[in-house]
Image 1 (cartoon, helix red, strand yellow):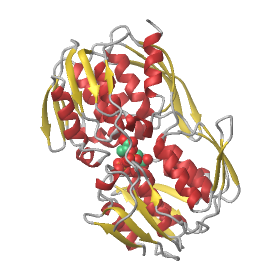
Image 2 (cartoon, rainbow, N blue to C red):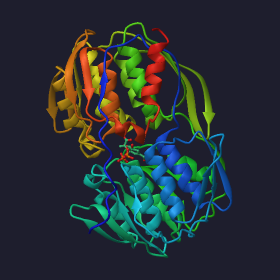
Image 3 (cartoon, rainbow, N blue to C red):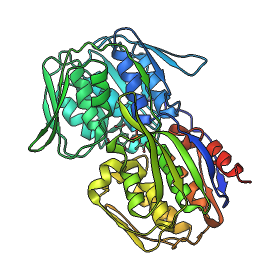
Image 4 (spheres, rainbow, N blue to C red):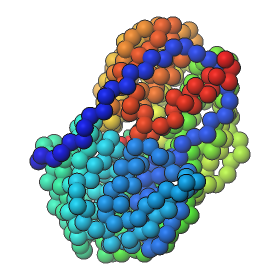
Length: 449
Ligand SMILES: O=C(O)C1=C[C@@H](OP(=O)(O)O)[C@@H](O)[C@H](O)C1
Ligand SMILES: C=C(OP(=O)(O)O)C(=O)O
């Protein structure tokens, strides 16, 4: 398949020199997973929803553009609140052009689910990173539901998806622990007659379940012998909502680690989502001896939220429990930086999924850490890292971010404790999930300059 590819953006090299301590308050950007879902579900409700605290990163803006292209009216008020007029479940329109998903796996896989049970055909395109990621994991269940999908070799983008109405309800057991696959099937089930069921042997982030129930979908979650059984009744009518998006714990992760490894740091992180399917890094850092307290526990938009206070503390290497992987999946790159500063050898395995994220995060982090002088052993499903025992990292190298925001931000945090500057070859990807990352870093450092 050939499609117009978006023009490449010039690389943005950024050099990080050791600075610190980091002090002050961080206001987190909205949670990326919840922001995508808020836009999608509001676009399918009948009437006007309001969304406060939406992440205005490139990935979420790709979802907004796609929902507009399929008929929803989505506008941002001057006060930063987003207003969405939905088309109703079943009401999505045929997009005129290919849907450009940019760098975003979540947009692609969830929207494929939505289109699968609508009588429309859509072409999905993305950047070089997204075009190398496997879509077979959603193609398989959506094909069972009746969608007709023509993908590029290896089940990749660009791909064309022709939805079927009425689609066929399925009972689908997830072969891989993936909230994106689970959500794709549930979203296809929204416009499918009868009950669509997903069985997940290993729990993954449950934002779709929480928010769909909040929008009035008939959705149940039971514990079965083979895992969680999530059932949704299709041809649902969603009611518009006022949504408050909590802060993103995957963005908080960079400050939790920076505050732990930079001597003298003391950071308060406000409004972090504490959904237990997202707090793996917090648990692991505490196991390593991090000084992190959580206060003011409350509920925001159907999600548990708290403020986190992190102070510098010596970290000790651990063997990271493999079963924590789903609740820490996007935080491995920054965990690897924490491990590089700990005392002893940290072993993190059981995270094979890291190989199919925006980059191969095992190989990319192994290369970046090795380049800055950290001793790393690469496994098929993780890394073993020999820590510096709290001493500064050598640094003095250029590292490749590989179109991966989490790599760019993780290596920027490593730069804060390096003896010689670390140059990130391209920091543009940061804009996908945390446009204010460098601004926030400067403010935390300036507080003590
Ligand atoms: O559902 C979601 O919002 C996400 C699920 C995870 O991906 P997988 O479903 O591929 O594990 C995660 O890595 C991604 O950043 C966001
Ligand atoms: C894996 C990620 O996102 P996505 O799959 O949506 O591209 C991420 O944000 O780390």
